[in-house]
Length: 106
Image 1 (tube, one colour):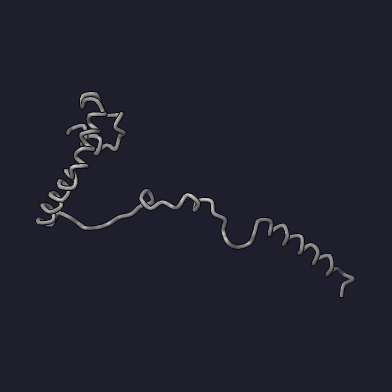
Image 2 (image 1 turned 120 degrees about the vertical axis):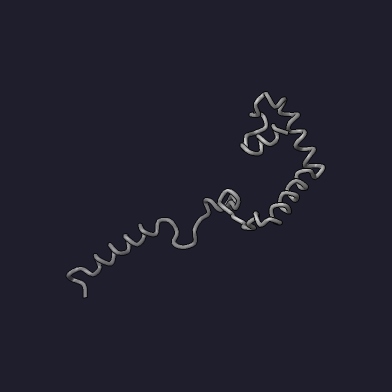
């Protein structure tokens, strides 16, 4: 039990559990069995009911960027609007316009 709680508290990977908790595979197996049997869900429900009864639970949801990630294609997606090279084209057109509007024009 202590190994499972330590892992949950620290967020470390199972293989990094200190040896004093026993083989990590056994600790993980125990954790998986409790999940399969619904032990974790019952513990959470019990704690929520008990704490909610005394007003110790604040039912607020918080989402940060580690939870709501962009789709893998959202990171480098091409933006709508002018295509690349537009500045070069604008500069070229303005040079042509300056030359045609010279002293002899008009």
